[in-house]
Length: 153
Image 1 (cartoon, rainbow, N blue to C red):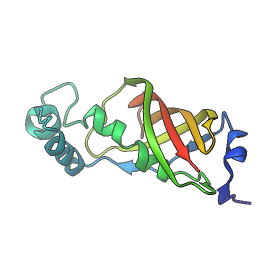
Image 2: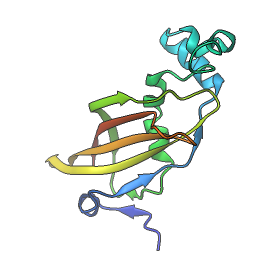
Image 3: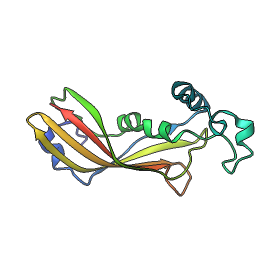
């Protein structure tokens, strides 16, 4: 039976559970648009010819682009919706490491393991997840982080 919605109290009982997202392809267009948005136009991101002469063998995604995929990857899991949720906001990361580059055209998916869910005040919950971005066919992940979110019900 697939659970489609859950209360915050029920969710709090699911610590140490992991959700895995569907795969998302990191395209050169995504990389170029991120470069335009952030002003980080280093050649390893936007110049396929020059990047082919580097140890990466081609263009790679910005580390912060990979990090910014957290919400879309989270939305592509089988996690149930939260009953009465008014909004959820990113609260930051306790730790973050970029482990391996994501080459243009590679697929990635997120692994989210809920470590803690606590009610900070009535109707406001704080969730901490271990978050890993897996690169399809690669031994090392793109990044690992401890991600904090806040939920308002």
